Length: 260
Image 1 (tube, one colour):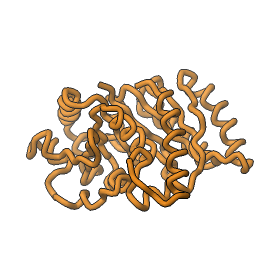
Image 2: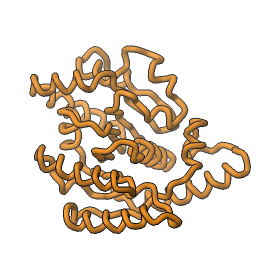
Image 3: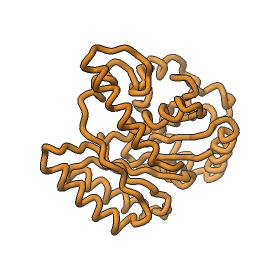
């Protein structure tokens, strides 16, 4: 089992989309996958068209498990075969509790270890904001992927992410992959940003692998509007179907490069 996190101190770079598709890919390969949302918006549910499940029940959040009000299986929400999600309710309150009661960190570690018995992969989806909960879960991660938007703000987010790790004594060596997102061969800015990102990665995360850049594709927004993953077996309109098939192939090739 591996605990894998996507992170970046910049919103809107595609962290949730990336980890959602990565998790679904492994689920289609027969692996048991759990994705824990540490974002109170729980946007990961919308990727799979299951955002109605966020409010379907008010007692199956991660916080209830930590408080020992429910059991491990009570908060699992199945969204695809072999793919389960966990939602959060109030991470700010939870982080405050972690800060005031250090014993709670052991509780979270024990929960992760318990899920280890049932899942092949545990993925963690973070918001761009930081908290004590973020620090604890990043420290528990075996592999961290930093998703970086290919523009000046995205590069700033990458630098801020590295500084965040250093300031909070989080092992920078846990960053195994850099995921450039938003590439376009017809636009100069993403090309320049990609070269700068490669240079910055050599300086700040020399042990990390910069993965092939993900292109900015309109099909992703179209699929998410329908609650469809590239790895779903569905029939779409001809244009969307062709674009989905191409996206699925490109993501499959990319995900095969990620050793977790």
